[in-house]
Amino acid sequence: MQNMLNILPKLAKDKHKENKDFFKRLKKKPPKQLDYIMQELHDAEFQKTDCLACANCCKTTGPLFTNKDVERISKHFKMKPQPFIDQFLRIDEDNDYVLQSVPCTFLGADNYCSIYEVRPKACSEFPHTDRKRFQQISNLTMKNVEICPAAYNIVEEMKKRIKL
Image 1 (cartoon, rainbow, N blue to C red):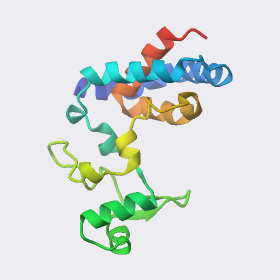
Image 2: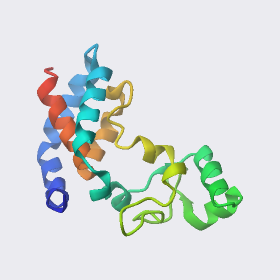
Image 3: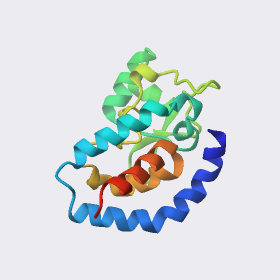
């Protein structure tokens, strides 16, 4: 896995223009079965991908925390929301709650998440490759292929399977 993580930024950079062109065409004319295809590709990839062997998303990026996330996680810590925010979060340039720093505060040395059961929605849905109307999140997907080997593999398989 570490070898893949070492070469992933270059692989993603080399495929950037190709992916950008593909997603542009996908947005204009998504196949009728796109959601079904993406679910199938997502499921197949995660049959063979062990996120615990990687955790690159947790090490390199931070999720957005919705108000619901803040409520749920602060309750888990038996804290009121504001002290939780003060201790762990900051407001970014888009006025969203994000972690004060990366790697994620809640990531253990063993790549386990200490708040897995109550983790933010953005974490539970990552890398968003099984999302409905997938063509609408092409910019997010372009970023995710740079940090997530599974997202990279899913996009490569998608380009083979969907001819535009």
